[in-house]
Figure (cartoon, rainbow, N blue to C red):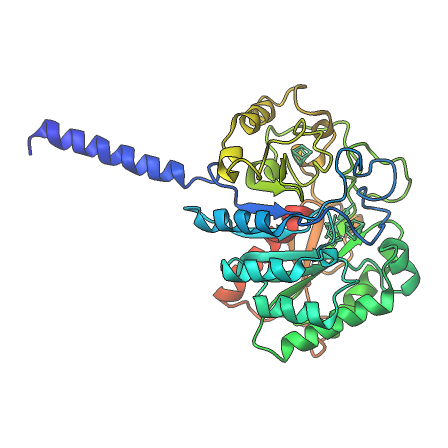
Length: 389
Ligand SMILES: C[S@@+](CC[C@H](N)C(=O)[O-])C[C@H]1O[C@@H](n2cnc3c(N)ncnc32)[C@H](O)[C@@H]1O
Ligand code: SF4
Ligand code: SF4
């Protein structure tokens, strides 16, 4: 081979390698796929804008819908076929998965495409009966994230309105018993949405779950309530993070850059907070007639990407006041409720807390994590923070 050929081969190889790197960059594939299989919920939590208050899901434009099972199958088949399948799938970011009449079919699909192992189910837990618990465990779902925002019945039911304290707590306890008696290791993150109205119960709620959850597998996510409505709430004393009007914009949005959000009718939003499709101008595309990757790499999404990069006033109105495109300040000390040894990691607006288990006294250092649990923990954090950082 002469020197020209060698140079040409080297250039070709370098081009191939850079193409391979390019194809595998996170920009070309979403790392998190969020799917609402339905777009309704049994509860009416006051901190959640979706189904009560001033900025709800617009039922004229977004009527109550159940995703056809055929579409769900098609979506999962496509995800499974990607050169780089998503690291995680989040079901029910803007709805209640356990109200889905096709839940069992969804679980079968996740299992048959071998994607349950990267799937998180978000739920208020009201309908987590034994049959559903067994099906979730048997499908091999990676993670269940029940919301539970109080320690007493009164405070809890003032936050998870229309959910019943004894029933949900009993459901979570039964789920853990079933899990612990089986070979299935679905982990649990208790999501405590902390508002100024339940702040005084966060430590007691931690203790309630610490008494029966597994310190190796499970976590407590202390999440400071954030106003993610399209239009800022006028209700006082509900959010620690209201909509923003000033601060330094960072020119990117992680939700937009990493996540693909598919709504129950197949429309694809800009992010999980684009529930009325106002941010994406009616949607970035439709999974019914376009491949997910074509939407992900398509013109509508690129135009929005450009507006984030420019970071000027051409970004959608809802984005201008959205916490996700502002530089984060650390959570102030006055809002920290747990000692350092319990806090595994901090997000911009939340804390991931380790359970100690019943045996360990509150002051004793926790055992070192093995490399495997370290990986699992990093994954836990990523997923929990993807929705509410
Ligand atoms: C909109 S909910 C849908 C899933 C399910 N219905 C549930 O409540 O878990 C998605 C996640 O957002 C959390 N969440 C809702 N409103 C929030 C807020 N204002 N601040 C922080 N987290 C919030 C819920 O606790 C849940 O973990
Ligand atoms: S249970 Fe979830 S979706 Fe339903 S109102 Fe509460 S936070 Fe919103
Ligand atoms: S800035 Fe906020 S509203 Fe806009 S795309 Fe990102 S998460 Fe959604």
